[in-house]
Length: 330
Length: 170
Image 1 (cartoon, each protein chain N blue to C red):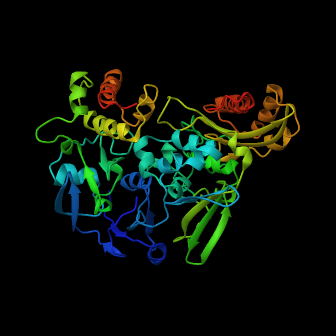
Image 2: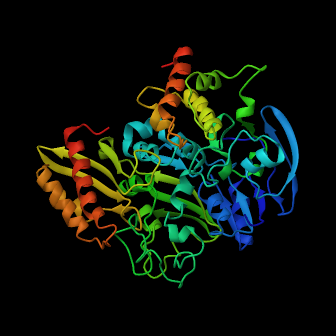
Image 3: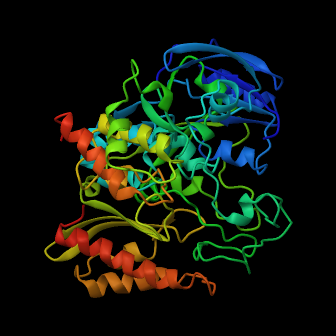
């Protein structure tokens, strides 16, 4: 690892000022991605500002049934909060299907949203990669891209967004709260994740020195019947090939309300904005689910090695919605 | 984790600095650079080589230690970030020359072959029982962060079940 300086701060304003004033600095939260990438020379900060002591680790119930998750709350802690388990099972399930027990004890919720992609060409610090070295090309485009994205891709980047819990949060219209040199703002989570387009190096709208302080999840009664399904190459401790966050309310045999988002297939956590409206009012049957899934995946741009994800994602959507219909979601 | 340490804005320059680490209930003062991982501090500077370096990138679990009682990966933790916290390694499990029950159970169940992942497996297993995820159907999932390339998994699970049952747990 290259030499670096380290500072530990106990209040957010000091942390923000310190990062703002040092061009080559970065916040250090759980470190599970960052320390790894610094060691591999993918990230090269001169100063790490340790924010683990900031008092941002609380999970609060909001009046009306929402949730405010402090940015420094750890994945493992959020997953066992009673109101998360009861009212937002899709969040708890997505958290517990991610990483390992050790990593979940370390990783913060804010850091989870900021985690970098697992594309091996990004991570090797050597290959052409428009995300790491803008303009250098994309080695994944015609390389080993079995795990790469089929939705939201561009001709500059096809890296998959790796988070599980972000998929659940996108399905629930969460809001990312931040504080920076220019004050505080609230960013709808779907706007927080940027498509690669021509600027894959830019993954979120945060400015240098802008810190995520909390993630708010609005009251969402339908989330009581929600599920996160994850399909991967091994049963545990692996990133998704395809995952689905789903919530649904069925009335008189028809879909009255539905939320649907996909992981493992998009360059950002993918809200199924075509499938959702197409389901409303339709009979809650496998045929309707299949039609909606097919409508969403018609947007896909598969490559030979990851074309299987088009089918897998549709099957996953059908299974997630069917499990909610049958009430046998975990 | 709330913590009582760190006055604001203590900046440590990239040269070697003094830091105090509490490891296995002893305070150790050492001079290291801020880039040194907890794992390297333990192994290279404190001579505690029980925690193993498998992948050094958070994928194998061989470096699992407890920080304030929670299992974490020492390879992805900076040593400086542990100042003011209590680190427990495999060397700190036994007391008065007696093996920890989990260590004894691993021996009794032959829960290893080459042994390289074993310290991490044992630290993780001890934490697993504390966390209360030791139902028969849960152990594999909650131990999945510790890879054993000799595939001693059935014996590792048997050792954990024995300690769980002996403790009158779930």
